Image 1 (cartoon, each protein chain N blue to C red):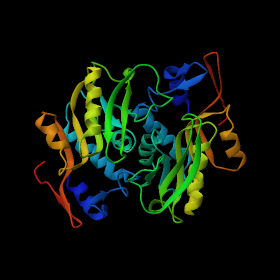
Image 2: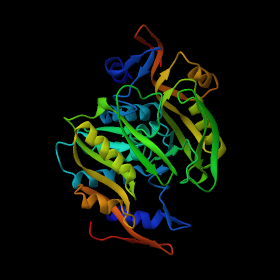
Image 3: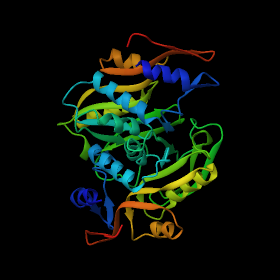
Image 4: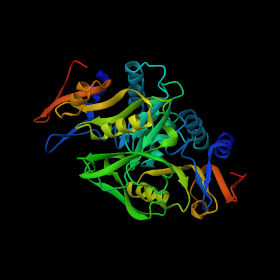
Length: 193
Length: 193
């Protein structure tokens, strides 16, 4: 997605250790006009009319999923929770996730009320690196008996193994920008997705 | 907001201890069409053309703020973070919050890059009870030197003191539904906001 790549080049910051920060438009401050274009692009990439649920994970996935859902007729957003919350009760789907960003293990949880065998689910998240969070969400879709229409990612770190593994496993995965390398402050995008 | 009150009556669940759960349409699963109507209502209640930032707090505020921002010309969403994240660096505005739901203290944090004296801020959140989170967000707006246009809340628990305190302090606060009591499974809304 050219608009997104240009925005990453313009406003992304490369921090020590070749870490890309996109907090000025994606995951701390959010540019809503860009989110709308991202939502339209997800719809183009996942045209399946049966998609009725968009599943994401708190926190920064929520805004992207909410805006994107507007382009999927009447799809509802369900966001998985990362911590045992007092607000979550009743039956839960649960999958364990290792977070390298947070340096911790946690469970992702979704109430069984909101996903079931009649649902067709698009999973959306902001970043894909090792794919831990995405695999957790996919496990939850599997537990629920829902159909997985695919996974839509805003930015994939193509130099980590998550995307490759998922594609090899046959997952219908689309990332709007795939970064193949960050070296000496220089970002190289993959050109063939 | 009549549509919201009707939805609370229809799909809200009263749990033991007279706790209202709205996780089927607001804070676990999100009904995006309802969110759009909520966003339009916030615009009607906060017509100030200078509003250029919508500040909220992770997690469930993010979807509401993202959808609402579409009705505020080019306003960006900034979401405060609740935990010390490795992704947050640089200068931060910080305010302490006591969470009764979580049974814990935490800090809310916003990067100083995304709020400053040239900004006019609408604060949005899903719930207002004791007002701890909202007061934390307002402290952050104050630290930043930005102007506070007001605070928009989806559901206020009018039987707790947060809303009353903030109105007495002169805050331009609007709640789309104010619940004055929940007794024996019966919800009573305030009729005069």
